[in-house]
Length: 457
Image: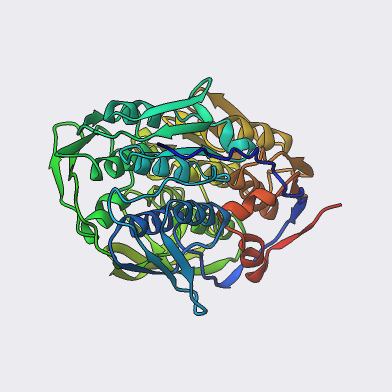
């Protein structure tokens, strides 16, 4: 019989932090970027599902990943941080998660929530998930639907939102599931659920998304098979596989690196080096786009680390032009559209960004958030249902002198702080505290190379 779960109402306790960025130039230096968030989540979770010890170096120690670590502990795994910064995970084996004796709080992390829901849905336990105010507003139906087809019973708030309770399937069935929208999170959730189901589970992916899960599952010993289709690909994972603990080296996060790259691209006389950044093709769309706009980006010392392509990126200030971003590129840079719209603001000409309706259901409605903030700063913008067009007028054209709303979204907050570096007048954000969810050192890193960001009254 399932144990009673203690339901505790989450309160969001972070005090607001108002920051302002002032016009800057000549950003120079070498800046280390924290570990990739997507890979960090997966390394901890697969380590928890493996037999034996997993050692992880370069882990992103931000709130989103720390929430996933806390969740795996509640599910029975042992996770410790060594004095040297290495994380060690002792897993419980595939299908071995324990029933948690408290609610699993995923904080602000949609990735953590969706992956964890997938991992427990084919294990016969009961688990309740919640998160902060932003996460509780985000749609979970996209992961609920395939989990119910595995046999899990899930009770959620109206609209398929957190808090929700999963009663994992006692007799899970394998699944063939075609992704209705491009989502690496849903793809991963289905694959993780398939590990504890009998037979072979298949995910059909019409549009390519980031492939970290496939790479890492293979390294942990899962049986993974990929078939190319006329449109997309099919990914097969064999159930009841025994994962074996591994050593994982997490590369620098390209999504975090994008903010430093953008800051260097839009400020004159800048020359910034970002060592050890992941350049996996399913994540590198932002760098391709910045190059097309005229940004000088060099990939130095390209190499493979832990099965992922890595390079040191050198980014220099550039004369930028507007471009039309191919809509099919959206999955490889979905998190970078906010900061790309900042770069477009100081480019010469119009930059069109379409095919990105997923931005509507991130930590905030990122399309509306960027449109509102850019207009407040004097930038001409056209809003579409699936994106936006920024009508840039070149360097020195952004008035600034505004406080922009972050909407509890880390990427919105960092994007407007980058804009302040290239505006004629300072640009601030009403609340920068959400930055801690993914890039706690952002302000320190960008000021390290010469940017002017300070507290605002």
